[in-house]
Length: 273
Image (cartoon, rainbow, N blue to C red; front, side, top):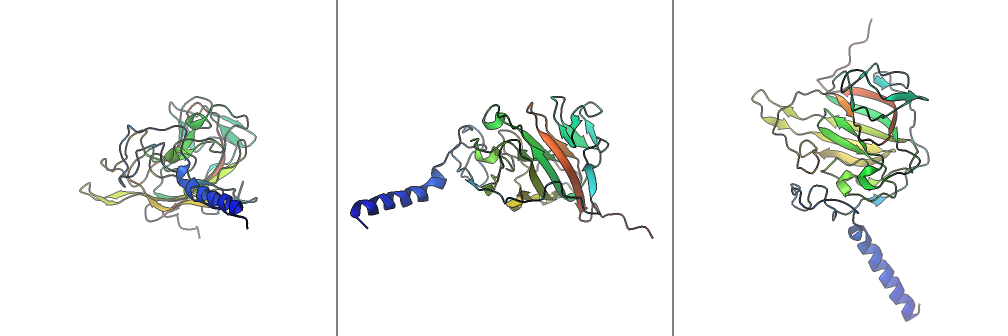
């Protein structure tokens, strides 16, 4: 190998080594509270962006719900949901629901620990950038958000991209598909618990698979997930709550939503004899 070639190779290797920590978001905030680890602000633009990967060519889309699951949306009606002011005003078309700038929706039933499957898609025609592109969220108990966003070639703060625990933890990798394509979340949720004296005895934990790729592995939450603020467990909550889907003015579609209650708070009813 010629000396000049060795120099080029060395520079290339050095650049490759530095790349993950050198990539920065195009938007974010530095006037927000510090995370508990003392390294990053909430929505810190300097926080390294997760590595982009390509999910497998085949994954579970429109997968049939297990026999013990509660089907929350099968593409036909909103019988399991309610809107902010009564009936849901989102539209149903071709087996999916789509936001209509008419407010958030939430499940009528409440759940404790669970396994949730949900499929979603942002518009194929890209409009906006950063947090203004396909923004929505799976909001557990109305307090703990797994971000929905078009994060395909769309820089934003790391703890606000698709599948992030909003304002707390970026996903391990960015497994986003291109705009317009259907994507999946599989969320395993462990609810926080308080005792009879309103003392926190167990924090919340979540495992998330995005398009079949593990992006959070039993990750502990700092508390709720507010915008530009640090979450906490200061307010004791019931062990069960609803599932909410946001409305941020971006047209986002959802389909094939089902949930399997887990744990002592949501044991399935015994089978009929």
